[in-house]
Length: 405
Ligand SMILES: Nc1ncnc2c1ncn2[C@@H]1O[C@H](COP(=O)(O)OP(=O)(O)OP(=O)(O)O)[C@@H](O)[C@H]1O
Ligand SMILES: C[C@@](O)(CCO)CC(=O)[O-]
Image 1 (tube, rainbow, N blue to C red):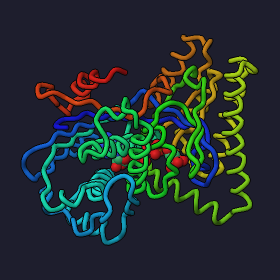
Image 2 (image 1 turned 180 degrees about the vertical axis):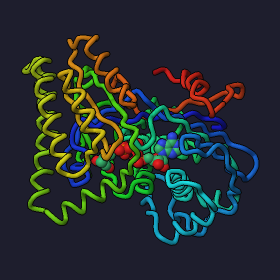
Image 3 (image 1 turned 45 degrees about the vertical axis):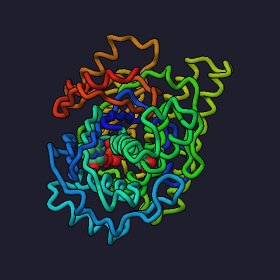
């Protein structure tokens, strides 16, 4: 591997966000908005990073200055993955030097943590350089799993760099094992960015498709989800997944008798959704009846999330506007701002949808009509002549055509 391009999707959670952190089911699917990551080996000892989505246009570090003495002593897949610990965090912060914002700090911490965790001992003694650039078509920190798609792409790129998996891991006979490795390292990077993730976001970014997910037990594929039409609306209100998850945890600790039944109700919503898709798949339920159930569950789930304290006036406004067009909407992801998801009936009048979008955009929100359930992480080798320009999304789109999806 000399030059590789990796891509991983974002996700939309239809049901179960927050409750999924507390061992309840969630239902989620991959989005057609993706993160692209480019990695090229160099012959020096420098690591050059371009992370324009977090305002890092270009920065270099000398890899020989990394705190290798604190790197994992057991390397690579098959060994326990080290956890970030306070001494490692402090030494990494000193290595990074001044970092202008929290988002950038978390992106860099996650990256160098994975590098220290995965690099073999021979690399500690003689690190060779590389250029790494990431660019996403997902809005960052908006509930669509940008951190998971970045973490999954990072984990895959580093596993390829150190020859733990081949670039064409998806078509190899060990594809399932390779995906499991990517997913488990991505989860560790998510922990660095996010504190206490459930793992649903990285599972969807790694495996793609539509899933029901239970922390610790993994996921099941849901058939039929692809046929859903969704509208995503970004409030553009900034928020932190980490802080919102911690806030729900505090509420649960303070009022367990109140919050636990809410978590159970959200669990029942996800299970009911799973059952409805199964019934649809087995032709026991027609599409209209499936959609009616999902619309009702969307409303109930949002109200329960409101009770958990993770809505925001902008999300309530989106719900109000969409209800004027007889559309059902809930927050998606961590809430507190970020994105809302609206179900669009297949037979909806297109003029009505356009009017709803216009009304939402008039309030300053961004709308995306999107498709769900596409492929998860993938990688391709690039030739010497493929030019890589990371500052414009148009240039990244051209490069993205290297993938067959
Ligand atoms: N393209 C990217 N390049 C570099 N870092 C990124 C990129 N996308 C996301 N990140 C990192 O992930 C963080 C966003 O994670 P956060 O969990 O808050 O949002 P999200 O994943 O978009 O939302 P949610 O978890 O609710 O789905 C950013 O602050 C940054 O550290
Ligand atoms: C809020 C949350 O449930 C979803 C964030 O996309 C957190 C998680 O599952 O890690």
